[in-house]
Image 1 (cartoon, rainbow, N blue to C red):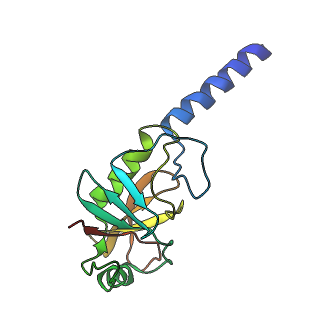
Image 2: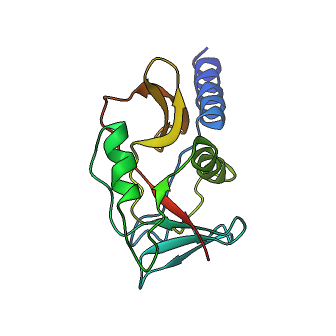
Length: 159
């Protein structure tokens, strides 16, 4: 009887792990996994992550503070970094593609060093004064009130 209960508990644990992958952005000093998505290349000198497949640059110098939706828009819009002055908030599709990147392998090591396991705004608005956010901790996305405070990732087109 104990063997059956233990086997059932182990099976349930394995099954739940399959549906809820661990998302790891491989912070500084994390060398636990050498699998790196080759489409995302980090330049430590200028603290940008380049998406070579889609010709985009992501700002990754430091984690952003938490801010309201429109503050996030202004934060990115007013950025002038490394000669780029056309920064914007990532779209829902761009953010979800980063989540998909995370799910390809349970412990994918990313070029991002400053993405926190937290909620991040996207530029994609929804009805009722809401906008889409992505959860880089649980790997989910949903809508939230624009008056809430979350982090932001800024992106620009690589030239």
